[in-house]
Every structure is written in C-alpha cells, then in structure tokens.
Amino acid sequence: MTAPINVLPRAEVRTEVRIPLRFADGFEATARVSTFRHLADGAEHLLLSFDGTSPSHDAPLVRLHSECLTGDVFGSERCDCGPQLREAVERLSIEGGALLYLRQEGRGIGLYAKLDAYALQDTGLDTYEANTALGRGEDERDYTAAAQMLTAVGLRGIRLLTNNPDKVAQLAAHGITVHGVVPTGVHLTAANARYLQAKRDHTGHHLDIGVA
Image: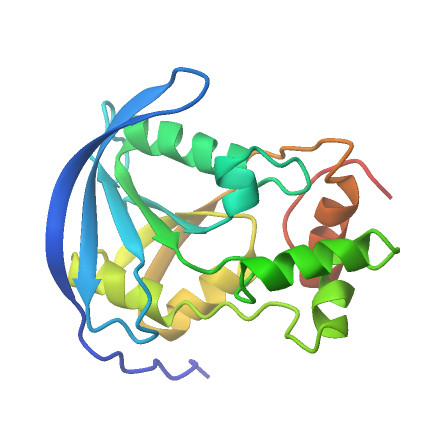
C-alpha cells in the first residue's frame, strides 16, 4: 500500500539574487539564492541554484544541508558538516541543481543546545544520547519547508545527495519524487569518528567509515 502524501501549503519565491561564492581553499562558484514566503516553519531557509558546467541527468541533483555554524563557518572537526557543504557546492556547480540551506542547527535543537550536547558527549554520551539527555528529540528536523521550497521552484522530481534515509522518506511523504540517491563522501577525522559511527549505527546513515 502506498503511503499517503501530505498536502503542502503553497510557498512562493520572494526574492532571487546572484551571489559569487568563494571557499577558504579558493574554490569559487556562483549561485542564484532564493528566499521564500509562507514556509511552514517560518524560518529563513535559502535555496541556492547552480546551472552546472556539464549536467548529465534529467532529474536535478539536490542537497538538503542543515545549518551548522561550528562546522560551516569555524571549520569544527566534531562533525562532517563543513566538508559536506564544500563537497555539495562543487558537485552542484558541475552537475547543476540546488542546495537548500536549512536553518536547523544541531539537528533542530539550536546552537546553544547543540553546544550543551557537545559537553555531554565529552562525558561519554553519543550525539543522540546527548540530545535526549537535554530533554530534546534525537533529531528534530522536519523537511516540510524543504519540500515547499522545491515545489515552489518546480523541482518535484530530483536526485538527492545524502547518506540520510530520513531525508528521502520525508520528502517522499510530501510528494517529492526521489529518482535516485547519490551518497556524499565520508569526511572522517579523529574528532568525528564517534559521531559518524553513531549516525551509521543508530539512524542508518549509509557511511563506510571502517569503524566497528
């Protein structure tokens, strides 16, 4: 039996602006950045569109990237967020598609709570145990707004750049057809090995990290 599809409230593009991007390693790309009205959670999410230099698929490549100040901006190695963002922009600049930059710090619990969770991880808890010890959900992210954004720009059939099966399931529940899943690279460091292992073992992320 096919799962019912949730009917989304309509979102609209409110502005679009072209922005040149330059990463710390010198990589450069240009994106069209869109903002939206009427998103379900009221957050200021962004959609970055890339034309691509050699697109090779009918279904565009899409990355849902949850904001991570510590990883994206400061280069923290406690997670793999910064390298995943850099990888996604480069792949999208070649293949074309879109990156949704979602304001979901700390898997939805916020920046301060994420840092509180880090302190608990330093006592031995894993990333999910630390969230629940704070009285929060293991992963509070909801991708309703992401589906609204994709629908608003006409991306109803996509390939998803992810290792996270929950993103695929949530988008499908909101009527986005995921024609294929493209895995991200594995950005393993000594500082994030336990974090990646927990994602693999606890929530089924597709990660070949060579850690038992």
